[in-house]
Image (cartoon, rainbow, N blue to C red; front, side):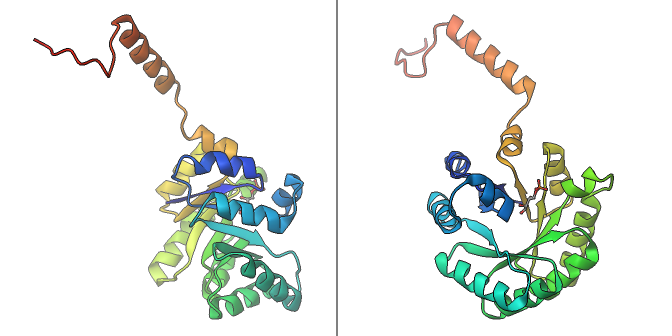
Length: 224
Ligand code: E4P
């Protein structure tokens, strides 16, 4: 499963880029607005920090003609850019047009299997299935993910299912169990994936024991 960071914050991208295991970044208008920086400048900086990664940047118009203009503008910025498009009628039409032109897309705000099906039919590169927002209103966000993976795999669509609106590591566990293709998450959640108290206490004990014995990895004396 690919691992994407969900952010508009360049400093967060810089930190995860150092790990060498992050495959891309998803932004959205809210995250870009929160960053306080210009859109193009932010997207280009993220591309530079994560060479080869897929960087999703979203159109903000809702009528087809303007969405197309915005999409072509954003796509011209960098080859790593993936055009993020909301799952509305004009959005599906736009995804089909962009697919036909060889421009990659990420269909966002997908909550149900029928919506995912429309995105897959249009040739979406990624289908962003939001889980947290469904859980927030008392539903089971992961249900549609399981159904969408099944649909994409059994019908042979090229789209990859991207689990979005991830709130905690358990969502990542569920995404892995559902055999989702991608998961995107905030910086805080991604950092939580490292954590276990037994890892911390175990490491402390290893290092304390090592120190007490006065050992060194670089010592040259032979053992008799
Ligand atoms: C995905 O691409 C979205 O940017 C994101 O996952 C939305 O998450 P939220 O529901 O926490 O805003």
